[in-house]
Length: 378
Ligand SMILES: [Zn+2]
Image (cartoon, rainbow, N blue to C red; front, side, top):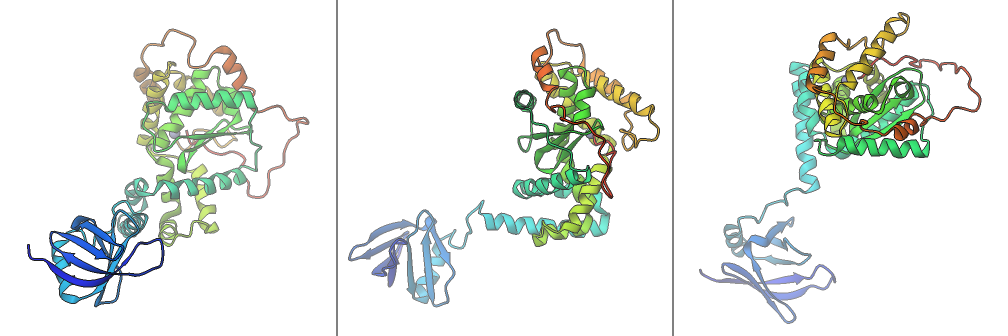
């Protein structure tokens, strides 16, 4: 291969000192100067922005670079370096650009086919960092809508809950480790939010008769997390304005979040999403050594209790817990395993005390616009 040479300047990327060098291009690029001797593979060369005829070449694996102003040399180099203008794969910028394009396409799809279709395509594309930031915002929004119920974090109970979460998540496919928080609230409910957040309202713990029942509820929410249903539902709720705010990077847009928070606790998932979360729950509970059918038992109990209170916004109004759903859960669960279940008696007793009794029990007055009876998200 014919060698071409030119004069150039070498930068070590550490000191600002330019070093005059001779560049020799063959099937490699040799850089020779008074204190410099480099022999770079052409595969490692990356062009960086410079005004022609100046050309600046960086080494892909380090801070070093060379500059020269020689059009024929630049032409020959460009012809011999396949990756000269490649941007590094996995770079934050590339991902961000791709993400923006995906979001833009989804906005178009939304306009053409409606939001539900687009949200299904978009949810898996939302970067985990964005989803986690969104989850934090939605969490705060929902807690406000529920009237700021106190966080329940009694230490020993918390430790049991964390172990239960880890056991249920072990070996199951999840985009992120679920973060479970417990809030004191008189409605038996559980909600999955974007970013793997799960909120348990304390009454669901009170309604559970054993560890396997609570495990079933938790695992059902993890099933929604695994399918990224919360992200889908938030996108659907926020609609086009939400998508646009994502593209524009305005996640703090409070008007959007109010809509999203409200919708996230009042809207339910599709029947298929519920079935999938049930199946996931049964698999996770069985894998952890519990009785998969316990989920059907607690859901039936809650449904019956709700029927006796026709005034209350029914727990399962948006997603009736049908006999068909219960039968499916039981048939997936199969025989009840021998043994004590996922939690020992002592662990279950401890977990039930996660919300220490308040010093002075009093009826709290709902704040303006507060949702006192969140509808079901199970
Ligand atoms: Zn559900």
